[in-house]
Length: 416
Ligand code: RNT
Ligand code: ZN
Image 1 (tube, helix red, strand yellow):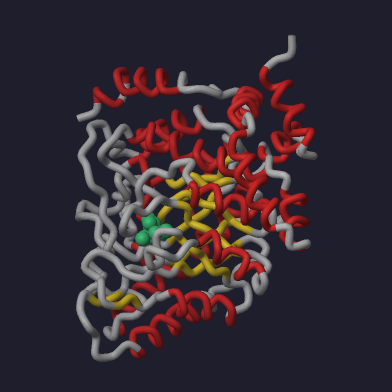
Image 2 (cartoon, rainbow, N blue to C red; image 1 turned 120 degrees about the vertical axis):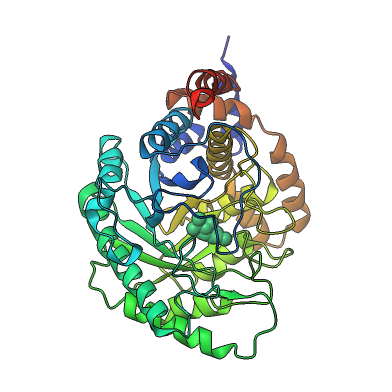
């Protein structure tokens, strides 16, 4: 009697797909796990609300409010997910032992605990300056502010973050992807669209004048079409950030799939960028009608993005980071469902007969291409997924949820 995996393996082999090779490959592909799902994007350096045009909705009990809690929650979530992980930390998650340092004065030592956490688990760290949730955001603007003191403060923050990113890379031995996103923009029709963008450009150039090793720090700029309260205009539009990255050596474009007009898809943009950039970065999320940052699911567009990375042989050219936050459900479960969804999408892409599909396209056999793309949807993917999970030492079925329920009863429910 053969196991379900053995049977699946031979079904895939008949299509020329090696399931063992797919599993072996996926085990070593790092995906950055965002710390901010654990506390609704708050962090440890301020008491004020989340600003910058992003919002979390919901008030599910048990959210982490200390570094120890957040790290314990991340540990729990990561222990239930297969695959190689990287940590993704925002500057507002600085950990102060007594003395507070404002964003423009942050130092590597304020992230020593995160570095220790990552090193103990063999992970690299990605980093993000935090240009929101802070009193120095003036009239909704940071790096594109007309107020020179404001703009300078945020430039200093960016430079500090480059130094911290360099430190994280040196300590962990993995490159640090440092992503710049600002919520800068206007609720209603601006009179000057060029001025803020010229100031944003100048600010970015000033930040990148801080010395760093290009092999260790990978700076990115993330675009966004609009935010809550910033509906009419954003300084960091798609054209702005893409052109900035294209014209500034060492800077990568970062695409967040919640940041475009609703009928645009990032799956179609990945190959366009790969024609021109050695490396690009992604924020992977699930927008419903707007940039709502719902928990990632194994849905069609998620699968399509993963396919574009895998079949273009770009797994080592695309830095993948998850970016969603749901405060209305158990936050550990939110992490796990999303992390597992992206792992499923990558595995699904690795299990496609990509060479055959490409050949059908290139020889104009489009009838057969449609037929085959449809047929492969019902291959025994679930059996290979289960095998992958078990080889990674995690549950290949829904039983991981028992762990989450137990953790909720024993840990989360006891939090104030
Ligand atoms: C906001 C951007 C940004 C943030 C994180 C917290 O719309 O997607 O990447 O989600 O930096
Ligand atoms: Zn993002």
